[in-house]
Structure formats: structure tokens, C-alpha cells
Image (cartoon, rainbow, N blue to C red; front, side, top):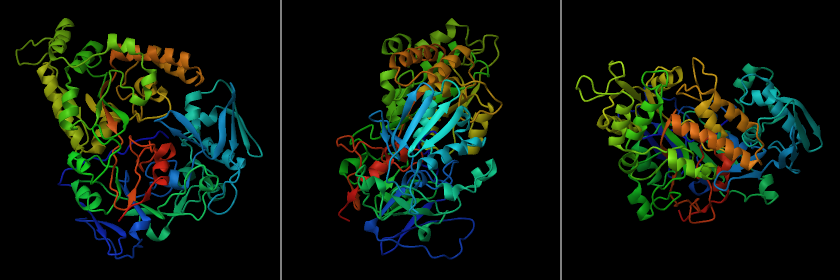
Length: 586
């Protein structure tokens, strides 16, 4: 379950607008305008605004329930309700002991978890070592995202609050550690109905029983409108002084796609407190203090993923690393950052490794092998390997004289990517590479990307995590299937690189020198062959206002947390932004 940042964008105004209605009692009641079908009359619970934290994160479709193992579970299910054994702070690169008082490899093939005493489920029962074992054993079902890691185990033994995992052979150290802070602990009594792969997938239709600071407020829950979480009377982390007790009595996360209406009638008018949507043109509001971002100046947002131009290496001439390098050299990334994003994002280095992974970058190698924007050099590279304008139309042809006309795709409505797409087309044109736009909605885009029926796409699948191994797995994963769902969309085949990725995963996390050496080798292959072209870093889109809640995360304070409710981030430091909020003047 890799963490991911919401892909919300400012959608075209032709899409259905969304509006927020706020009652005189300052309770939130969002609804849809212009829907094709009218909703039946219903009573929606109201809440005192000063007790309510209102967020707008990554819930674009109606909520499917509270199953934390599959996409589209209600935002907050993991983090506010169901917690994990560890958490991870990517800004400080450290693991946070959470439900586990400690969790680490005790030897080369054993991993020990010591459950923190005194933790209780929301039904009053104690959280135990047996509960941990129950959760990991759900990995026996093939559709569990941790099925492969579970299959590598020889045994799971419980003695009191200690759980010992023994592996059959050398573990995938990085993947296992990643699992420890991403596997949500569900209540065994509630989850005893999970007896098959099908029931694992259908689980989560009841109000979840968790160990977190909040529980579902059934009266305020409407899967088409919002989820509302109510603060519990007692939370183990506050009682044990592991974390502050959160001040908001209620947390409501809204459902819906977005457009500029949300900014106008939502955040700026005080109807919601945190917007995890990408919104352009925020600088004047940030400068005036009406809204806040993590950084007071550009780039405003923390970097959370790499946006790539992904070439289909099975399509001619994209299978030629020299052509790919020339294409990379033709793209004016600085212009995209400045004019598309108004410097609200950062340009990547040529490895694409995120700023939080800077210590793993071989800087000397990067300096000698990196590519950078240079139209003349791109033309020279193309000519040197036989790509020339044979027919005088202003574009180069293939080495055999056949025409080159590549198509680029992004999801329709993702305005920032659509702008970047046009700029890439124009940059490539200056280098005499013909690229045209293949428009289509998100489903069309995903189908093409996953099936390999594309030439070029923008993609930002790999997200920030505790180890760059997941990033290299994305670039080099083997084997290639007819449908790729999460890795190697470029369909690039390099057995040496894949063996290095596997070796990296088998190298203990404390063997820093060995891991750096392996990553340097992987970076060298990446820089030489350019299987993907890194462009810019996507941000943790987060805009807040302080009428009702203050003390938001910021770079110039000690509150260095991810200010987002998005799925996958609460078990990092998302929960910390909530526990450190203070009531505002509103």
C-alpha cells in the first residue's frame, strides 16, 4: 500500500460544479449542483463550526466504505480510526514507534514486534499481540497487497505482547519495513467475517472499530457527500503522552471533484479549513495572509512525487536510448516550472530522486552524466545517430526514412498537466521532433498507459516513501505483462538493472554503504539509458485558512508535518498536523 498524493486538478468549467452550503449554525452540508438525478430529501447532521475541522482531500468518487485494503475507502479510515504499528516521518527520515513500542529485525531472518501496552480498541477491548498476528495472516489471501511478503514467512509466533516473524529465506528488507508502517490494524472481532479473497475485498461496510483518536459519526456520514469522524473520549496516544490529544471534536472530509468554485466558496469564505487541491494563482492570497501553505514563498509545497515523461520503449523510435536522451534534452522544464506552475513546484535533477532522498544521489556521477535542456544539443544528438529531416518538413524522420509522429497523453481536465503537455510539444518541435496531443479522459489515459497503447504519457505513480528502492522498482520492474498497473509503464527491459533492484531489496537497511553502491549503479543505468524522463516534483497540495483552526504545519516552525488528509499520508505525519492544531478566532 504505497502512499500517494491526491491527483485533484482544476477541472474544465464544463464539468459539473460543486457547491458548499453552510448552515447558520456553521455546520457543513456539501451538495452537488447540476446533477442529472435529484437526491432524495434527507436529514444531514449539523455540527458547531468551532468544533469541526473541514477538509477537502482526495475523495473524488462516492465513498465505497471503510475497507483499508483497497482504494476508495473513506479518508481517515487509516490514521484517524485504524492505526499502524509504526509510522514514518519522511522529512526527518525516521520511523515512529506507534502501536508497536518497538519493531525491528532481531536477526537476519527474524523480525520482532513489541506491542505497546495499554492500547484499547474503540469497543473497549485490549489491543494485543494476537491482534497483530491476525492482521498479518490476512495476507494469506492472494488479493491482499502484502500477500507476497506473507508468503515469505515461515512462522508468526506470539508470546504476550511480543510477535516474532521468521522468514524462510533472506527477507525483502525494504519491502517488509515498508509494510510495517503501512499495514492498518483492523479489529479481529469485526474482521472475523474475512474468510476468503472475496470477503477480504467486500469487507468494510460497517462502522470500523479502531485504536485511533476518532470513530465514525454515523449521523453525519453520507458516502456521496462526506465522512464525519468524532473524537473518542480516550485515546491511548494522548493518555500515554505519545501525542497531543486533538482539539477538533469532529473531522469532516468532503466528497467530490473540484474546480475553482471550491476555492471561492469554500476555503476563502471559511467554509472549509484545508484544501488538498492543486490551485494556481494562490500567491496573492498567501502574501496577504488569507491562506497559508507549508512554505511562505515558492515553491509553497513539499515535494512528494516525480512527474515523468514516460516513453513507450516498444514503439519506434522510443526504443532507442539515444533518441530518448535527445528528447529529454529538448524539453524546457524551467519554462514549465515558471509559467505553468508559477514556481510552485521544483525542477527535478536528472535522476528524478526526490529531495528527501538527496543523500542517496551519487552527485559526482550525476554531474558527469546528467542531461539538461539545450535545443541545439538535442538536434546534434539526433543527427549524430541518424535522425534527419529527409523530406524537408521541419521534423526528423526515422533512420530508415519513415516518418516520426509521436502522440502524448494526459487526463483531460488536469489543467496543469495539459498546459505542460503543450509546452513539451512546442519544445520538441524546436528540436525537430513531431509530437501531437492525444486527448482523452482519465479512464482513456489509464487504459492506454497500462496496456502499452501509447507513445508518451505524463505519469507520477511512484510516491515518497521510506526508501528509494520502491522508486527503482517502478523504473526497472520485471517481468513485463500485457497490462502494467503500477510499475515500468515504459516497458523498458534491463536484466542487470532488475537484478540490482532485487539485490537492493535483500540488503539490510542499516548497510548504508552497500545500499549507496547499488543505488549508484542503478542511477548510472538510468542516466545512460533514460528509461523515463524526470521533469518536476509534484507537491503536497495543501492550502489552509486560520479562522477556525491555527498552528498549521510550516517550514518556519517545529510543526514539520504533512498537511494533508490524503490516503497514505496519515500514517506518515498527517495525523500530527491534526493533533497540533489549536482553535482559531472564528
